[in-house]
Length: 47
Image 1 (cartoon, helix red, strand yellow):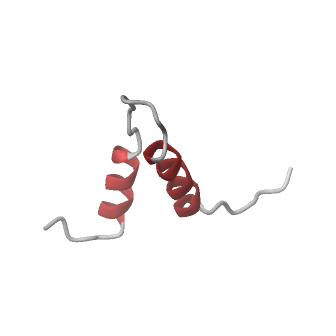
Image 2: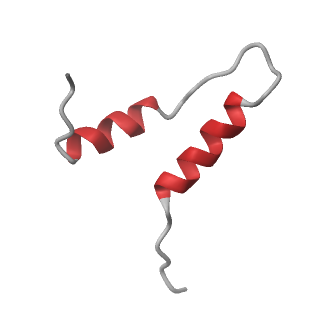
């Protein structure tokens, strides 16, 4: 099995876009912890 790079930003963007365009009145955005961890790892200012 060969390893492949994945474009995590693209996957997150597509999933968030799908959630945002959904007609469902209630949804869960489960990406917050992952996004926060990635931002902190890359030293993105919090304020």
